[in-house]
Length: 409
View (cartoon, rainbow, N blue to C red):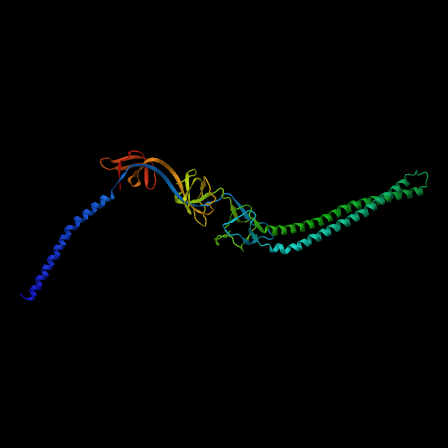
């Protein structure tokens, strides 16, 4: 046999081996695939045992601690339309009653203080001088009135003499003198009354000028005194956020504020609550009056009993997030660990079923308003009445017994 024949036979045997292997794989693969499919199908359907356990339908919320009552530290009434923050205590610092917490710039009031004191002194001197001048003039005119009264009395006495005693010419002269003295008396009386009225107005103008200067001085002194604000009581000093949204920060030295604007607060830590936000898609899933548990993120081992106090009906748009505001009232407060602004987790308990029969949520199917389960073995499909469900389990009121097994796909 030559070399070419040997090579041809070797190639033939190789092709036969490859075809045999392919045929074996073609027969074996469907069998193996069917076995794997049956194994997966067997694993997919599981049995679940019906047991008794305590079930709670809990809805989770996140929020932060908030003090419903606080002492507000606002900008005092100062000179001008606005005031500048010169210094303020650190945000979150513990302060005692009487400690300085905020200081406003009172440079303008200090600069005008001496000038306004001088104006008050000058206005007081002018008022006193005017009062003295009026008193002198009133005394002079009073004396003139008294003199006119004396002369009028003399003229009346002369005119009281019987006309037969004197001549006709003398009687006429006495009558003319009487008329003259009576007119002079009336003129002196009117002059005194008119001067008293006019001088009273002049003195009142001087008095108002002095009062205005005094008020201006008092305003400067109050501005200087109010520029340094002290804590009304002991607590945590919380700096308020800046009114401008684009800054997105708390107040700091150098910011301008207006009288009455809240710069900081000292919350009352003896009573705290939780402010949370319910997303719009979850509205209606919790309601006021539901019991709740509050867990502070920084103290996960502490659980505080609480109650959903209020669920807002309007979802205002805020710069942080949009949703319905939720207020949760705490049954007890621990000022040692609670601080405003701390993040918390809220578990709103929508339902409780102690020692209830439970099945996995996946074992229950719903058709319209009826629930069904598939019992293992000969039980088949069965209608059940549920107390309620959580995302994981359902509490069964009737239709199953403890120890039953149900199919769970």
